Image (cartoon, rainbow, N blue to C red; front, side, top):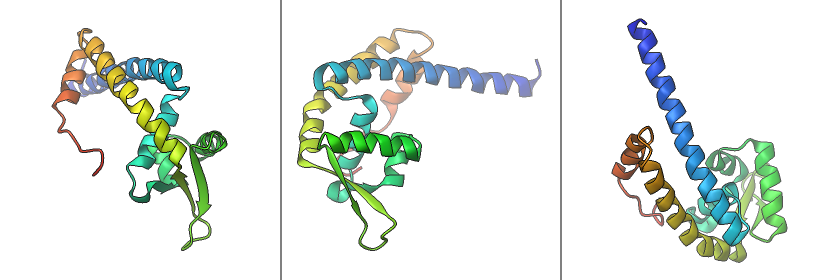
Length: 153
């Protein structure tokens, strides 16, 4: 194998390892959040992303990027959360084409109830993943990242 081929294989293996770690974490989080709060991981992600914004609102396009969803999937998700009174939409006063999504009091309350479940499950899943030799270096890399205050993020 040539050096260029080795580099491609190393990147490919890194990507597969990252995808495996993501799958482990997402599966554990999905089960815990559904069981305890009837909330999916992506729903939690949306509520959490909105909670970090000044005024607890975001444009739909920003929300799609934050949740790593297409615009149509974001619209369906927002519809479901709006039906559950977790968030609401309104038109931007400066740009009538822009639609904001805003966290409601019910959404904030559910997020605060779910956050300890999310955090403890994530910690547990990372500890478990650390026991898998292929995943341990990625877990160590995550632990070495500087911590960020969620209020100022």
